[in-house]
Every structure is written in C-alpha cells, then in structure tokens.
Image (cartoon, rainbow, N blue to C red; front, side, top):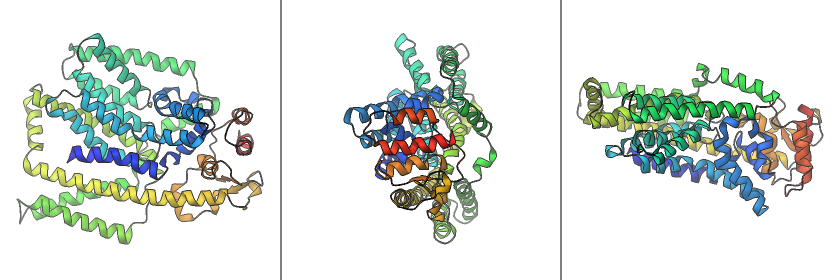
Length: 463
C-alpha cells in the first residue's frame, strides 16, 4: 500500500501540475515569466546561489528550450515538467541505490512522498527538490561502495541536496547522524564527515561569490527568523490531519471493547463518514498559499522518517540494540499494521480532497486574473492607467493570491499581450529592480516589447 501510494502520487503530481498549469502558481509565476524572457539568473537566482540545484535542473534547461524554439510556452511547460517530475525521479534513484533488505529505505521514501509532498504540492518551494534528493542520498550514504566511484556518487548527491535549500543542511546532518549508528569509525560515517566539511566550504564560497542584492538580504533575514514560527502550523490542513489521527485512535479504542479483532477495519468507514459530513457541510477552506509555509513541516518530518527508516534497516541487519528491535517488532504486529494502513488511507483521502479543492479554486483564479488582464478596467491610483487592481476579482479566491507575482501571472495568462497589468495594491515585495527590468526590456525577444515595458514601469515605480 505504501509503495503504491508513493508511486501513484509521484505520477499524479506531474499529470495534475501540467493539466492545471501549477508551474504558474505563487512564485512560479515570476519564475515562468523569467523563463519566457530568458533572464532567470539576473531576475532572481543570483540572489539565492544556495539553491542552485533547482536552477540547474529545471530553470536553466527550460530557458534554453525557450531560446532554441523561440516559444516562451515551451520553456514554461518544460520548467513545470522538470520541477514536478522530481519526486518520481527521486524514488527511481532511491530504488536503484537502496541495497537494504527488502529495500526498506525505498519503502519509507514512498511513504514520505505520499504523506508529506501533497502538503506543499503546487507551490514551487525548493524543499520539493530537497525531499526528492534526501532519500537517494540516504540510501547511497549507507550502501555506496568504499571506492572512488562510490565516494563520488555520495558527494554528488550530497552537493545536489545541499544546494536545493538552506534547510537541506538539516537533512544532511540527519543523514550523517544515521551513519553514526554504524560506528564513529565506520567508513560511511568518516566519508560523510569529510563530504559535509567540503560542502560547508562550497556553500560559504557561493555566498561570498554571489551575495544577494541589498534589497533581498533583509528579506531573507526576516524569512529565516520566521522559518520555524509555530504559527505556520495553525492552518486547516494540519488541524484535519491531527483530527483524523485523534478521532481514529478514539474510535479504535472504543470499538475494540466490543470487536477487538475487527476494530481497525470498522473504525475507518466511520472516520471517513465524519470527514465527508465536515467537507460537505462545514468546510469552506482552501489549502493554497499556506502550502508555501508547509516547507517547514518537511524540514522537521523528513529527518524523522529518515531515522525511522535507518532503524528499520538496522533492525533487519541486527545492528541495533534489543530495546529498539523490540519497538520495531511491536510496530510491525498485524493489528498495528492494520491501524497504520487505515491511517494511511485516511491521510491520503484528506490529501486527495484538499488537492481537488486547491486545483478547482486555482482554475477559477486563473480565469479571474486573465479576465482582468484582458479587460479595459483601470486603476490609475496604482501608478499607471494600464494597471488594474487584483481586488476586483472574487473575494472568495483571496487564499489563492500571492501578491508579489500577480503582475507576472497576468502577463503570462494574457499570452504575453495584456491590456492591463494586474497589481495587488497591498503588495510590499518587488522582485525586479528598475535596472534589471530596463535591461530586459531593451533586449530583442519573442515576448512583446509592450509587455516587458509594462513590467519595467511597475518595477521602476517600486524599486
């Protein structure tokens, strides 16, 4: 069940993302526009050199395709595909690298994909790639041979993981911690120490060679201070997941009084019925822009699952102490396995429903922004008669707004020929400097000059 769930979600991510143009959601709108005008590094990526892996594996190839074909949409679709294929590619690499008995690391990777990735699916956070690379990195770290080639594979995987996101260093330290269980003098652990030291030097060098612009330095500092803010988890999706586990546990305990052998099976349909009533009668939420903040949950949960996977592997290999082996054995008893399977089904159902709600609302939001971009409505108070306020859209779609990228989204959805640039009047974060936007406007590109001039006007008013 776990493997099937992980693989099905990995394929569904690609199909759903491309069908609903999720590469345009949130920050993806600005990234997609940068691909279309072939200026990704100058637009933003020079500010985040610590996330170069995502740039090299998705945006750079997409930009090259847009340049070669002369078709901005070809580059945008390529970016979407390369970004959302990462979980499937990560599982394939984990399967190939995993030499544990029963490929337990691959099993946990599938479980992690099914349980965690839907939380952030749709928002182009670089933690999406960190998750995909963590599991092959874990498998290779434990099972790569003690040869030059083996060390090179581990080093390459760790470097790619380290340069996905600053939070990936937490994941690397977790991998190193699992290697310590094999012995502080073991070859895998010593190899991991050496590689992590080299990566730390490379990360520091990247920050020195490619420092962020002054405008972004302060923004990154503020973002880092709030990365682990507990308020991030005060969202409906977390409440739903915790409620599902709590209600199921209560039902399981209650039904076990009368039907101890069938309790885990009988509790599940009751739980599903309760949630169906909630969704149909009481729920009006959309897990949309909160998907970005769930990247913090991944930084916390991925290492925990990695440690669990390592203990499971070492239990089979006879390398863990007896108390730990007893815990692993207790979790694998038939009744507990049935309960865990039921929870997996319940969590998967929640993810399916929340994903369906999200893409439905996102489709409506795209249509609303496209309509505004092609309309003759105008709000000159925003700084130009060619600008229109995003607040003219339906109020119930507010959870879909990502104010800093709405102008780029409106340009793309109007097929790069908007009558109006859609602006959020409450926006206080601006991606492009006047100099960068001006330089891009002056180039010879397929994207119309008029559109790039609109973006320049918007940028120069604010930066």
